[in-house]
Image 1: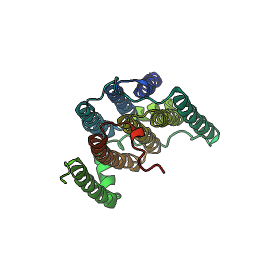
Image 2: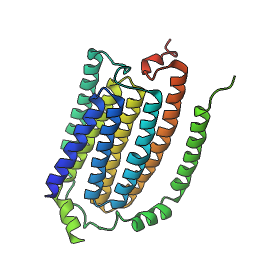
Image 3: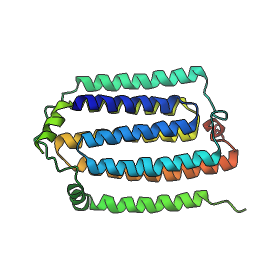
Image 4: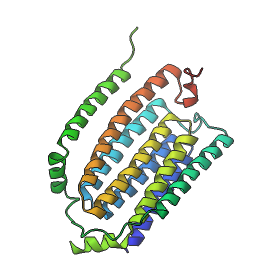
Amino acid sequence: MTLSIFYFLSFLAILSALMVVVSKNPIHSVLYLIITFFAIAGHYVLLNAQFLAAVHVIVYAGAIMVLFLYVIMMLNLNAEVEPHKSVWLKSAATVAGGTLMVVLVGALRTSASVGSPLPADANIGLIKTLGKTLYKDFMLPFEISSILFLAAMVGAVMLGKKETK
Amino acid sequence: MENTVSILRQIPLNNYILLSTLLFCIGVIGVLSRRNAIIILMCVELMLNAVNLLLAAFSAYNSDPAGQVFVFFIMAVAAAEVAVGLAILMMVFRNTGTVDINALNKLKG
């Protein structure tokens, strides 16, 4: 049962990820990417990381993809104005990516296989455990990421402002 | 909470590694084969998500919450990256009238 849910979610994620790359219309790409993100959120629930799944849906499907959609609609992009590479370049890109995949899969197959999981603690995906870890062990990175956000915010406003000459 | 362990035992960790590898490579192919800069950014998001999934899987299989905290940091970086990247794209579109990355060859010698 669990295994079939895993295969269904994986199939959905991979198929819609392929459609993101293949589809001509940028709006369709965004919508397929949202399907991929929901499939990945399903994987998080399967891994017993409920809080991570909620945050993933809120941040990715709720914020980032809305930003993408907004920009695509503001720039009025559609299938007609979509630039295309030549078939030769596209097939070269596919061969390069496929070679990378073959190398990675080959390297991972021969690596020592991981044994059965440790006696799993079912509470690690809960917000209490994650908050304790975040504020005890990762205090400094947390503060630094807030500075990163400030810099990103200032940068986005600076770049988005109309230039006055 | 006993059944959590049995659920994790049903799915080998190798399945998650393979799935993440596939998603990452699809992202690489997208970056290499498309010319629309917005689609390229979306494919970068796909690659980041493949890594996130792998980190969460390792975290669950090792019973270590640090992996999931890493995922939060990656999400923060991804959000900042998207905000700045889309602002740069808006700027490029305002100056060149297109989001085709082949239009950005002014630095070519």
